[in-house]
Amino acid sequence: METPSYITTHPGLEIYAEAHTTAESQLLYKLNRETHIKLRMPNMLSGHLQGAFLRMISHLIKPACILEVGTFTGYSAICLAEGLQPGGILHTIDNNPEMEDIASRYILEAGMENSITIHIGEALEIIPVIEGPFDLVFIDADKDNYISYFNLVVGKVVPGGLIIADNALWYGKVLDPDALNDRETAGIIYFNEYVLNDTRVENVLVPLRDGLMMIRKL
Image (cartoon, rainbow, N blue to C red; front, side, top):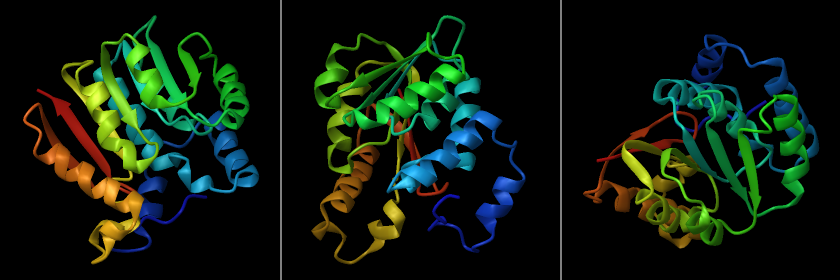
């Protein structure tokens, strides 16, 4: 269902990887399918492979508090929330109120209504009022604000905590000679360089799907 990856060396590798990854739950499969049927840009969904990766990371960290910037239909929020400690909380922010209905329905069906809180509005205004601290942050929103989101959250992340930013390769456009002429591509390029040179963190850009920038707070 997902948009083919731009970062695999063979078009069948991502299909092979998905086939050899623990299958989606029935609930996530339904959410994946409904997103692709009803929404104009379903490729914004994390999807099976990336969702499984996020779930694995969350289980390894066992976070007490997660922040997600960019809810969309709630797929990644549900995946991330599976690794929460008992009594843990995931805050997810989206500026599109039309996404709240579908995300809320699936969060309720997943039995996570007490562990996932949806905030509707501008993340630049909402992040400062969420107390934290955060063990894990997932950023998947408007690309030209990635540096701003990063700077708002990094001080609230516990030492050793993790920030993951999606679309760090931006469909391969980061390699285009005229990449800086495109606002969103430029946002990703500036963000990647900013993180690389930030002494508060260490990072690795993982070529999974459209690229995940993984950042550990020092």
